[in-house]
Length: 399
Ligand SMILES: *[C@@H]1O[C@H](CO)[C@@H](O)[C@H](O)[C@H]1NC(C)=O
Ligand SMILES: *[C@@H]1O[C@H](CO)[C@@H](O)[C@H](O)[C@H]1NC(C)=O
Ligand SMILES: *[C@@H]1O[C@H](CO)[C@@H](O)[C@H](O)[C@H]1NC(C)=O
Ligand SMILES: *[C@@H]1O[C@H](CO)[C@@H](O)[C@H](O)[C@H]1NC(C)=O
Ligand SMILES: *[C@@H]1O[C@H](CO)[C@@H](O)[C@H](O)[C@H]1NC(C)=O
Ligand SMILES: *[C@@H]1O[C@H](CO)[C@@H](O)[C@H](O)[C@H]1NC(C)=O
Ligand SMILES: CC(=O)N[C@H]1CO[C@H](CO)[C@@H](O)[C@@H]1O
Image (cartoon, rainbow, N blue to C red; front, side):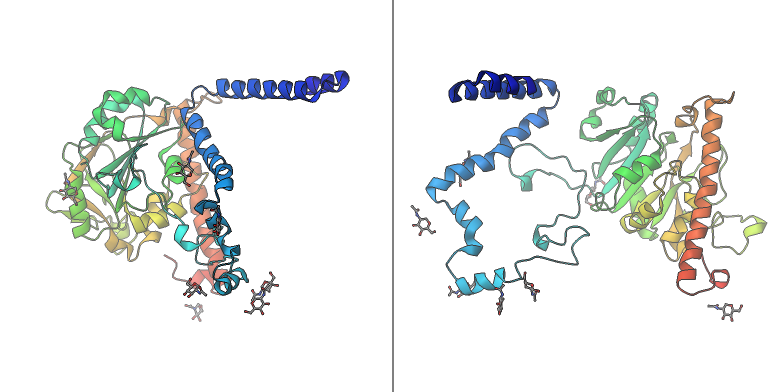
């Protein structure tokens, strides 16, 4: 551009030549921009739609259309008294109850919530959805676990929105499964379940869902049915829950072990001696982070509890109780629909070898470090709060 501009000045071409040159450059530039984004069909779609209003505006200018009149209506001369009143200060919109940052919008246009419902590109929006799913299930997955996830997804009815977080960058391969086309796929390399949850499960985004399942990829679901599970969660009024864990597999806490003799439980069958009277984790008010299920309200709180930088979520299970009250009644385990924890190493061994340590060791160390950091942050936050309220933190009955 600089060179052309200079030569244009030097040769002083007449106006029409300059116009042609400029136009030509504009066209080439436009073509290059178009050519450099060949894989972005949406960008192409956006161009005409963003041009439309201006086209219509200039088109309408001559015709004195209703559109222009609508634009100028407040200044119009019909009904001057009310218009003037509107203009006089009240025309400045400020609605404190609007979401933060949107106070200058008229409340009726504020769309504060969203969802993961897939829509069509044609037709009318009100007819897009044949079903409004009331539940959301997310799995954090690698392609290697596809058969396990396929089996798991089949345990969730059409009333569930399926959201997959891909940590290995492989997404299109999943289209071999029929259900993949109605699933949402989010891909970011080597991130953890809680990293995705913090970023993509913002409470206002998942607001339409009564229950949100945030699950690992290595769960055996042979004895699990999601609709039945939800029924029991409602029946037992659980805000945070998980399916019972088959005891024969791996290490589990007493609290989350499946109990064969009941539908659900809120405290372990045998409490270890050191927590005989306790209503606190891990004796009660406790689920693990591998397969939690949150109610909408509980999730709104838990989302805020998740720290942006502590991606492994260690220690979160011990803090969940802060989000529901009374925790030992609203956190529990559903025994009648139960799962098996298969403990397949996945992200755990995708760290980097460092100082002669295996990749998984670095990951494990970070998990422990995060746990400690999280505990400290929670403790400091509570202390700061009670201090600011003039309460001695030491004799506050902090939960
Ligand atoms: C333009 O709009 C004004 C006000 O709405 C109306 O009085 C007038 O008749 C319109 N003129 C034309 C040409 O439509
Ligand atoms: C002005 O508009 C209001 C409603 O918007 C109406 O009630 C009122 O009668 C109108 N006044 C005149 C003078 O047109
Ligand atoms: C606003 O309206 C009041 C009366 O309602 C009037 O006294 C005042 O001058 C108006 N201010 C402006 C800027 O129009
Ligand atoms: C009305 O607007 C004027 C000028 O914009 C401003 O100085 C005045 O404080 C406003 N009055 C009220 C009641 O908002
Ligand atoms: C889906 O939800 C509807 C409405 O709650 C219910 O009638 C239907 O049975 C559910 N589908 C399945 C497969 O349970
Ligand atoms: C805090 O402890 C002091 C003495 O240790 C006691 O007098 C006070 O009532 C306690 N405050 C609360 C809120 O329990
Ligand atoms: C090109 C285009 O969108 N034209 C629209 C301009 O606005 C009128 C109504 O104001 C529509 O009927 C046209 O389709």
